[in-house]
Length: 115
Length: 111
Image 1 (cartoon, helix red, strand yellow):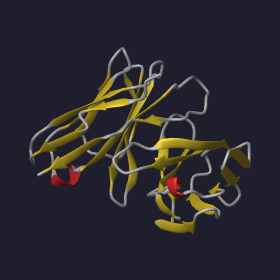
Image 2 (cartoon, chains in turn brown, orange):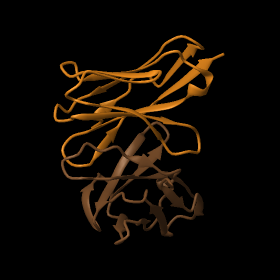
Image 3 (spheres, one colour):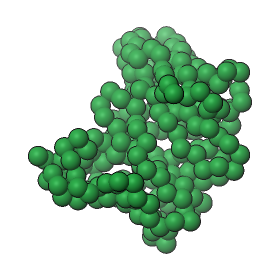
Image 4 (cartoon, one colour):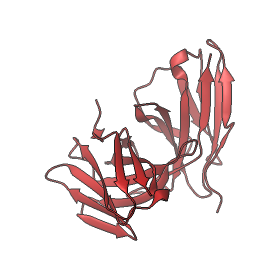
């Protein structure tokens, strides 16, 4: 079974631009979560989507948004990029069966550099 | 507020010895805990998990211990191998599917 895929793997943008990152979950997984990883900060939770609805949201400004499609694929958008948005953005998927304890499986990440 | 903490940023261990990575959490509602391993330029790879109804879970060379009263979990790797050198993250979740991650511990296994 194919793992979580993320595109693009690397991206360079300038301040003020916007960017869209894509994530395809493991087949059959219905939940997709997004994380930002910066040096020394660990993985900071951005948001989680399930059945095309945002179910959980982390403490990030409204410039960060996402969506999920009917096939569970997800996109994340960052508008008005700032230098501090330079990070590794990770997507994780899980089965999300009701009442279950989940294991999230991660993609390789998208490395974003904002100049 | 960091609900999951890994207070040791780095750890060095001789090959063949035991590696012990520690993690503390503050939220008593967490009931599922996981450890991930991460190599540079790759996403985290799931290693092992434990539910709050258990205090120990083993998978080969990896054992996770959970002390609920102390809100502490640890990952033991025995014996440690050079290929285990990576950053290890612990994560915790409660109701819902939101996970909280620690800041990671960089393990170096010296041949």
